[in-house]
Length: 468
Image (cartoon, rainbow, N blue to C red):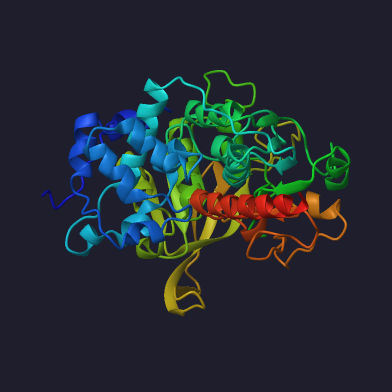
């Protein structure tokens, strides 16, 4: 038995750094079968317990071993409505693969890579529409078409509920389409997953901003009996340091949305964001890696990650950090911005350079005692300030739930961070109103949001079945 998982075929770093095509190319059928043979099919199945949506992992891998790719897909789809997405962006290394028995002595089975293979094989080889269940006669509204909303919608549609998803933007997918770059998660993949849900009867209404276009109360007046809020965490956090209001300072949300949905990556974009120059991305999570690698593909001369801890504390996925290093992203670690400097020509206020960034001033850090999460706290080193010449700064230090729905909905309780307060079933302080994902927790992983959507769907089913 091979002690190491099979490598994922990928574009060469020197090639992919200059295009937006998907980096990872996916397993072939032969590689997938060989990787599946590494699975021990444990009776206690620790990998399943570590999956937020409880995919029956040994069962679908067994079907791959036998070459039954369609059956493998059926096993996955019973638990996950977004397998092609999860196979690409979920942090399997800290979830299912972290509990893999093979991983005790060797490398764990490539569960995520196998899930991606099965989903892609299904999308390429199957065109049959699913058999819809008998209608239950109940209408459910989903606010937001991100991973939690789509999961909740899919689980309820499969049970026979009439489900409508209300999406604020012009394209369905939420953070999957506006936040994750094409080279990590192609828009066509998300569109396929959404189309699969539509075949189950899910209706998607775009350009509907709940809180402005419609309110929660108005949705109930339209005949919906339950509502799930999966509106995500689209309110960017900033550092509140001098210079953040300069023209070429962006939140990661704006930077990635312009690139992903507003096509800033085109040769002559109608919504340009940056061309050339040096870019500093502040933060060390997956969003920071996405922004840095996007900036490189948009033509940046140099891209710097500025992070206040060391490489060992980077919260981004190991694979994303490795890809960034291979592509030439420069990591400026143990340093923190204290000011953003800009160009100012008072003699000519019409000068187009006015307001542009010229440098970012940082202070060096050292790691002190652990904080409440167990990570060593970064401490400033007095007198160690220095400047990095840059033309663009992207702030990628997290997001908070948008306050719009809370402000327009009476009786909806939120915590001090703006997250909607829910019980273990996702029920809010309003009867018939459920919530999950980043709207509750703040920015987290795709798979954890899916788990919340799945939990809420089961609770909504129980609630509406009780009304019958």
